[in-house]
Length: 358
Image (tube, rainbow, N blue to C red; front, side):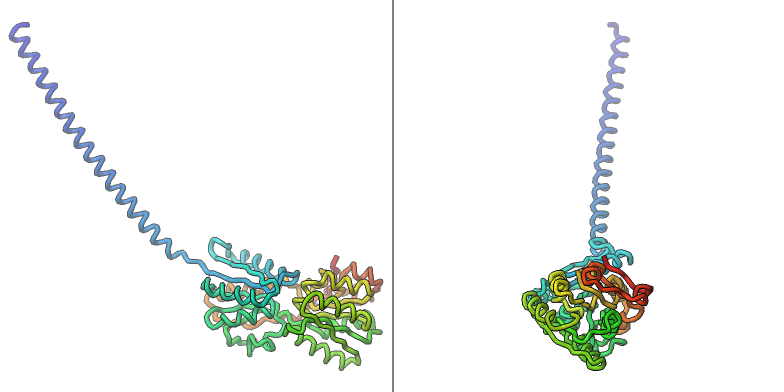
């Protein structure tokens, strides 16, 4: 290699070295930039997540506690209808509302514990199905609005003093039993009736209230009324057997203890060939002979509507108690009709409000 070639080679080597140094510097710069970008991205992501979580803390949803004294067709119908109507109104349990359901199994101590739990849950509204439940829930009404359902006598039960303008932070729907219309139907079907057996639990204030109505009706229509009571199913069955030996028809109001055992009690009446009139359509579904009354699904729907009003800011005092006593239906159990061999008049058969229960 001559001198000129050596110089050329040396120059090339220097350029290559300088180029490598430049590339190394560029790589380090790019690496620093990428690391900086990564750090900034991490900080931004962390900040977004932090503030995103903070904004979700305001996503509180209303809490509603729903309690019933015992499980039977009437009260279950109200509960299920209430749930369906709440969904219809746009409330989805677990998404935009929390609804807690509880059944006291006909035990007052359980009922008190349930209401206490609803208070601890900081419920926004308590729904109390049936009179005993509403009376227990009244203890919480000082701080939590209460909406009752299926309370026959809200005033007599001391839940409200003025149904038009509830003043105790309690309102709701009443299934006031139209005793006169039910017994009118009984006499229309069989004008020879002279003696009526009244079956009930004396511990239920709604039943005691209906007993007084029945006494007034019987006195006005020269009928004899014989009472049969029981605090549990064993006692009620014994009373039913005894009454069926003395009366022309059996009648029970919307008594929760009676309603919870309608299948066995109605069978006692059928075996004795005694028509069993009841205070609720659901009791006819469970074997009773006939009644004049409301559709209990309507009670559940209206109860949900009231809860919706309260959750949207309406004061309880501005929500009147709703009593269902107009445009009532006649419910007759087809199986009981056939078993008893009763023939209905054309007036009843052709009544637009007659509903035959299969």
